[in-house]
Structures are given as structure tokens and as C-alpha cells.
Length: 187
Image 1 (cartoon, rainbow, N blue to C red):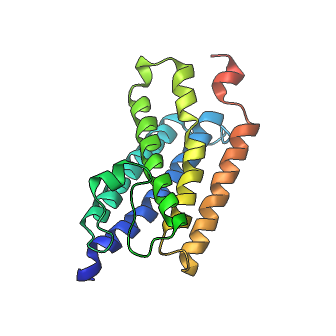
Image 2: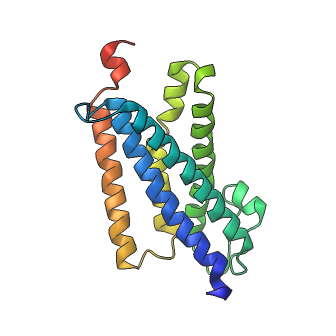
């Protein structure tokens, strides 16, 4: 494990970040639609949604940092900050595009989080427009994981990825079908 510490840390934190991101999306949909209004508690849902997304960012930062510390891929800060720059031994074009999607996804994730922190200084409409990027963000991260992930041949990983993708699709459909509580109440 010593020789591959950073590689294993990068892989594991990427998977954890993906799980947290999908769960954050699901919790956000439950919060915004009040789909479970008989049993939900908005304050609890918001706190959990905030924790899930914040922890996903921490895991993403660790994922990227471990990629820089790993000797095999040895990404530079430029590789991780500029989409389309990163390449490594044996990389396919699909993997390089997947990595670029990962870089863009990190920027979108940070933008969504920043606007959430500044929510009270923004119009509700502007915040909502940025926050809706969460849906394509999660799909992009799923593509990033599928195209660049080295665990894609692992059955447990495949099952997890399928469940996460299905949760994302269901959350998206629910969000499209059930209007937000603010649109329903006119607030």
C-alpha cells in the first residue's frame, strides 16, 4: 500500500465524493419539492444537504491533491486547474476528455457552493439558476468517473455506479415533475 498510498487515496476520495454529491442532490430535491412533506423536516434536510455538499467538496480537494502527490500520474496544479491539459502514460483520449470534464465539474461544484454561501446577497432567481447546474454537474461527474475511473471493471463499483446513476435520474425526474414549494405557494 505504501507505494500506492496517494493513488488509493485519490480513488477512494473520488468515490466518496461522488456518493456524497448524489446524496446531496437527492436531499436537495427532497428539500425543494417537499416530496416527503408528511415526514420531512426542512431544517434537518437543509443541514444534511449542506453537510453532504460541503463534505463532497473536501473529498474532491483531497482527490485532486492526492493526484498531484501520486508519482504515476503526477498531475501538476495546471493539469488540475485547466481543462484539457492533463495527460499521463497510457491515457486514452476518452480518459483525457473525462479528466477535463472532472476539472470543469470541480469549478461548477465550487460555483454552486459559493452562490449558496452568498445566497442572501443574491436574487432568488439568480441563485436558483446557478443551483440548477447541480443536475448536469452530477451527470458530468458520473461521466468523469466512468471515463477516467480505474475501478470501472470492479463489480462492486459498477453496482454502486448504477445505483448512483439511477438515484440521479429519479431525483431529476422528481424535480421536473414536482414544482418547488416556492413556485407552488407563490413565495
